[in-house]
Amino acid sequence: MAHGCYWGKCTFCDISLDYIRNYEPITASLLVDRMEEMIAQTGQNGFHFVDEAAPPALMRALAIEIIRRKLIVSWWANIRFEKSFTRDLCLLLKASGCIAISGGLEVASDRLLTLIQKGITVAQVARVNKHFTEAGIMVHAYLMYGFPTQNEQETIDSLEMVRQLFEAGILQSAFWHLFTMTAHSPVGLDPEKYQVKKVSEAIGTFANNDIAHTDPTGADHESFSFGLKKSLLNYMHGACFDYPLQKWFDHKVPKTSIAPDYIVKAIEEDELITANPNTKVIYLSNQPKTEIITKSKKGSQWELLSLSFETKKETINIKVDVGQGNWLVQILQSASISNPKTVTLQEVKTDYENAGLQDFELFWDNKPVNTLFKAGLLQL
Ligand code: SF4
Image 1: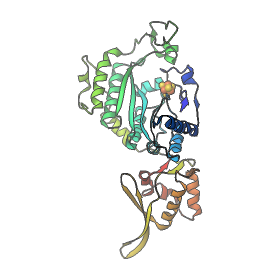
Image 2: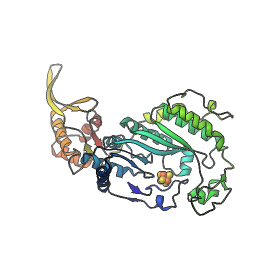
Image 3: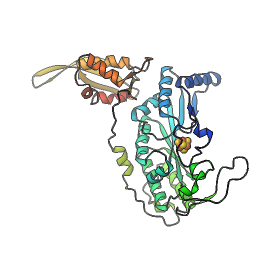
Image 4: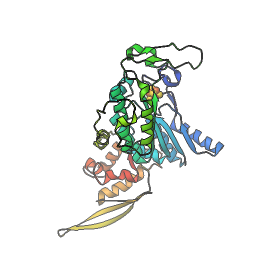
């Protein structure tokens, strides 16, 4: 999707080299032109985007373009676990054929993630993973141990975070990598700042990128290799979540300091979604069937509009005031993804008010309308 990485800050990464530093995205329409050409040339319709970290806004534009052109493809990409991967964005990506993503959770410790300048927290990764998993997109995480100054407690706590992510069912696959100090990363360029010492200078002329180093304040990182990998293999098979972490190691390790419900609590937390007038409103599905129904209670009668949405999985039915319901049907047509112009939340609100209807937020942000994401009404 793009050359280079739009983030370009992680301190273990070769961010001083062109392949990371020079960020140059292309447009979604050009990308999909190329996908169409490749399908015509090869007959293949599976795509792996090899970006170091695909930009969420471009992924959104790509997904919209794929759906508009009615391409039947499956694709996957590497990402950063950004907050911007909301529930609705993940649903859009899935609808366009995204089947999996991989991303760096790295050390799964907030102190070390800050030192890495990864720009994420473990709780944020958990929430983003939940969005991907619930949309039906598989998540693979790159894990790291042995980052400078990482101590035994942090390694065990990191393992506990990973255990909880698997147990909560929001991570499907992962791999532990031992930190490598590379010559062109901020750590490799300035080891003292990260309290590690170079043992050897990189010598030679080609691909001599890794630098041996010592980590005087950190743990004996390699002694954790086997236990981390063995436990992970079991977690990936849904097994041994109840094993005490000590069981994976043949040397004494500290008890975890992470609360046993840390990840569950993080994903149950209500997310504050700030309404932005420029938010795009997109409707992916067919128009609903409508019917006026009469309700009665305690001797009085009134009419409601019943709207039924057929999805692949279920029929979703909502009942709303007739005036608001008729307006909703018309706005679903304007917001349909098959229209070349995308409408914004501000335009939707203005349209509602111009129709003489009252209290937009009360109607739009509450049940039943806010359950319509299940029927493909997305805010992006
Ligand atoms: S590790 Fe990934 S996200 Fe971080 S700077 Fe490198 S390519 Fe970008």
